[in-house]
Amino acid sequence: MSPKQQRGAVTVERVLDAALDLYASEGEAGVTVSALTRASGVSTGSLYHHFGNLHGVISALALRWLGRLLGELATALTSHQDARSGIEAVVRAYLEFVRTRPAAARLLHSPFADQEGTARAAEIRDNQEARLTPIEQWLDGHRKAGELADLPTPVIEALVLGPVIGMARRWLTLGDVDLEEAARVLPDRIWRSVGP
Image (cartoon, rainbow, N blue to C red):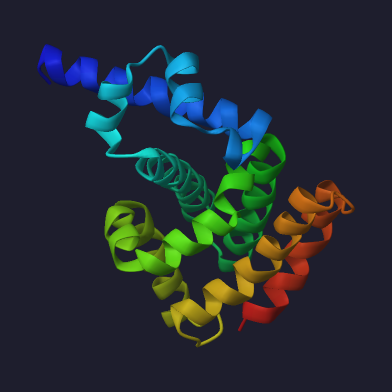
């Protein structure tokens, strides 16, 4: 990487770090160009050069955290040899991500992220291919071995992540659920829906 590319990468990281801090303290409405330039020390021109516009900043931030979440889920899943342990580990890893990174989790579960996911699903999937492929291979291997229900991957994904995402959204918006209790109860309940 050339020195110019390194400086560009540092600038991008500074803007994204500042954007998450602003999002955590002020919500989406607080992530403005002037607030970002103040918080990151990056010029307006540089911000537009790297991201195109404010939407590009939020989109890049969501993509960054989606990648980190998927990486953690892939590690949790693929580090287990048996299907049940892997599925249960994914449930716990997701809830732990939400509990320990609430600002990033709030962004990933926001209407903005939902709209981006709908509008750019194929592009986002292509961008996350390296993280998704090991998950799909693990699921396929365990399904073929008869250790998982013989269901298409999207159905298994919905059965595993649907309840977890619902719990995460509730905790992030209302705060009236205990994520530690959910991490004790949900893994077994979810396993029952996808086990053989």
